[in-house]
Length: 537
Image 1 (cartoon, helix red, strand yellow):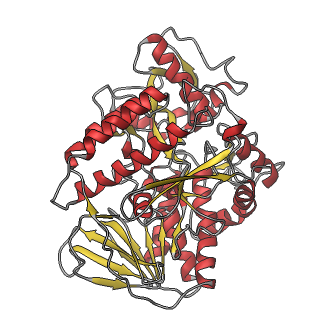
Image 2: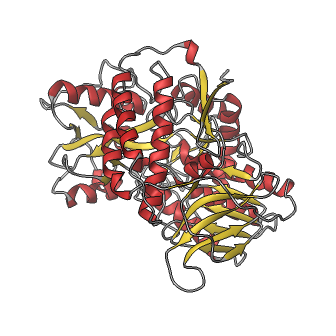
C-alpha cells in the first residue's frame, strides 16, 4: 500500500536516514556518527518539537545505592503484566546505566542533591528510587537540548525540518533503501522528494492523536508506524495504549494536546480525591496513588462513571515547595486559573503512550530488511502490556545504540529504489475529528466488544470519504485511520483484561492470552494476524 502523493521531485542521500528527532532519533544519529556513517535526520516540525521535549517524568536507571538492574527488571516485568520479553528487558536495565552516563557525557544536566550526587526519585511501579530528573519536571526539554546541541555540532549530520515522511522505498530485493517525504518550505527541497540511504531508522514517536484527548504533541500522528505497516512490516501490541491518569481537565470541548500532571506529583505525595474530598485509591491497590498507571486510570474512569462527572481531583495543597519542585506544572495550572497551593486540580485520563508499534528484535530491526525502529515507534518487548514509568526515555537511549552498532556491522551496498505500483490511498482530512471522537468513546480506557464494534463500524463509514488532493492534513488523517484500524482489530481479538487493555466484558487476565498479537497488511490491503510466543520468565 502507499499514500496518494506526487512523484518525488528531488533526492537527498546519506548512509542512513533517521526519521524523527526525539531521544531515539537523535541518539541513533549520534551513535551512527561514532562509526563514521553520514546521517540525514528527517523531522516533521522543528527539530526540538517532538514528544521527548514534553516528557515531565524522568529516566529510570539502576544507579543508586541498594538498587540493581535485577530489581529494575523485576519492577518492569510486573508492570508489563506477563507480556514483556525478558531478554529485551534485561538489555534495557543492564545497558541502561551506561546509556545514561553517555547522555551525561553529551551534555545533559540532571538534578543533584546538596552533595553533588544525582538526585534519584521514585514513580509509580518502582520499588526503588531510580528516576533521574532535570529541572524538576522538565527532563525531556533538557535531554532534547543536550542532544540537539551535539547534533548541530556535527557537520556530517544533516537535518531536514518541516518534513512529513510518507512511504518507504524498496530496492529490487525488497530491502528498504529510503523514504519519500514532503517538505513544507521553499527552494530546492519544497514538496515531495526522496531520501535514499543504506538503512532507514524510524523514531517518529507516538500516535496519541488517534484519540480526541492526548498528552502527545500535534505532530504525534503515528507516521512511522503507519509507514511500516504499509511497507508490510509486522506491527505488535498496539492494543496496549497507556492512558495517563492525571491530565489537566480543560472542559468537554477541549481537543488535542492537554497539559500533563506528571506521575512524579503523586510520587511526592499528592492525593486523588472524589467530589466529596475522599481518597479513593486507598484499598484498591497496595501502592494507592502510586499504583501502575493502568490501575489508576481505570479507577479514575470508574469513579467518573459512578459520579457522572468528567473528572476527579488531584490534591497537592499539603505539599510544601510544590511550585519549586514542579515549576512547569504549576505555571500550567496558574495559566488556567488554578492555584495548586489553594485549589484542587481537575484531572482525567488521556492517551499518553503506545507500548506497541513496529515489531523489532534486540537490535531494533523490523521484519523488513533495511528498516529499523526505536523508541515509542517500536515494539521491542520491553513494555509488554503496560510501560513502567520513565522506561520510555531509557528505551530510546539503549536501543538506539544497538541499532547503530547493527547497521554499522551489516551495512549493505548502495541500491536504488524501484517503483511502488500498489494502489494509492488517501482520506478526506475532514474525517479526523470524527475518527478521534469515535476512538476515545469506544476504544479508550474502558473497552468492550460492543464499543469496539461500534467504533469499527464508524471507521468503515469514514473509509468511504476519499480525497484526491494530497496534502499534510490528508496524509496525517490517513495514517491515523490505518492505525485506528490496527488498534481496533487487536483490541477485539484480545478477549481479556491485561495491563493497559481493559475489556469490560472480559475483566479477567487469562493465561491463554499470554501471547503477542502481530498484524501486517499486504500490497493490496489484506490483513493478516499471527500470534507470537512471549518469553517472559
